[in-house]
Length: 136
Image 1 (tube, rainbow, N blue to C red):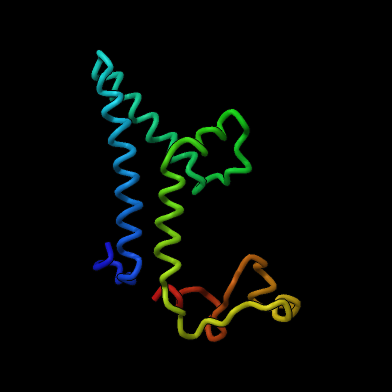
Image 2: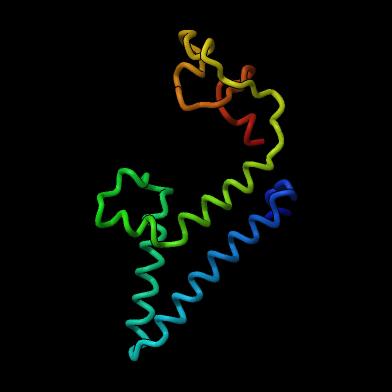
C-alpha cells in the first residue's frame, strides 16, 4: 500500500500495527465463532459482526448520531478505533502540500471565498477552485 500509494514511510510502522491489531481482533472473533456446532451459523455470526463493525465504525454515520442501543457497537467493536488510528498515522506524517494555503478567520469572512463556503475546510488552493491539485 505504501509503494502503490506513494505514501510517507514514516507512518508505516504505526499503520502496520493498527492493521495487525484489527486483523488480530477479527481473527479472535472468528476463532470464537468456530466453536459453534453449526459451521454455517458460525460463518453467519462472523459476517454479521464484521458488517456491524463496518457499519458502526464511525466512517458512515457519526457516532453521536447513532441511537443509544446501537451506539454500544460503536464503542465495543474494534474497526472504528483501528481505522481512526490508521488514518491518523497516515495523515499525521504527511508533508505540507505545495500551493495550498490555510483558511483563516479573515478569509472565512470574505464573501465568495472558498473558505467562506466550507466552514470546516482547513486549507484551500488559491490557483484552482477544485481540490484536484491536492490529490495529484
